[in-house]
Length: 330
Image 1 (tube, rainbow, N blue to C red):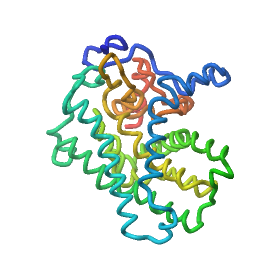
Image 2: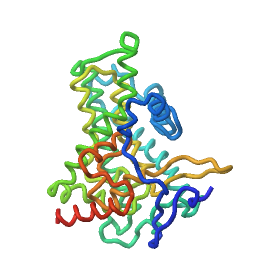
Image 3: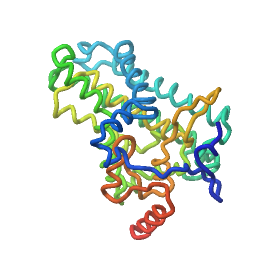
């Protein structure tokens, strides 16, 4: 499998897919049952390959690597530390796969790499002038502690009856609907908080840390300032408004923690033997890192950028509009 089957490189060496991006969902298809079915169950689609993978991972974590909810009525170092270590191990193993495969062993060389430049290791904008080390520090000393703090706090609140509860046996349909909508909830929350982070003050004091990665790698996904991590994971507050189950709390926070890494890989596809491949990077979000003032949404609600006039479809026209918007903002 070759990148030329799906796109081309421009004069500067940037890989560009043949087809322009379309907002998701495609608004004209929202009443087309065949398209809806294909978008949900197709490959790649809403469920496959990643949402189903992350859901299975969350279920395994819930059943085998989460303390009993009754033990969480009181803050205790044992179970709190266990959750932090568990989250650190998960993100280490998951993200290391993409980093090792694509950047250390380079098993597909630059095939499908958006930007041919390597990760930076002589730039003063990064800690120790090294992009990889900088990303690791922000991930393990900020992202994982804040991710874990949200999870610990909400488990404690649930255990003490401060959150309205349901159980699967009595509310299976409600439970399944909430479960399936978590990617949507996360995407909507991400869009509006991302726009907030691009306001002048928050960008200067926090979000610019993430945008140092204009050529991102897998570890760039959670490389953020603590203020941004607090905002990013705050979507879990929805469960203060609606009845829920502790697994759904875990899944929402886990989903927020696990999703950015492959999407920031810098590669459009990851290729295996016998022409097998999986979607990997998020080209729409890569354009955001490249041009800043566009494509604030991700995943399943990219129509929000279309509605608010910040959608970049990968065309030269969109690039011109985005650059004009950046000049006006300066």
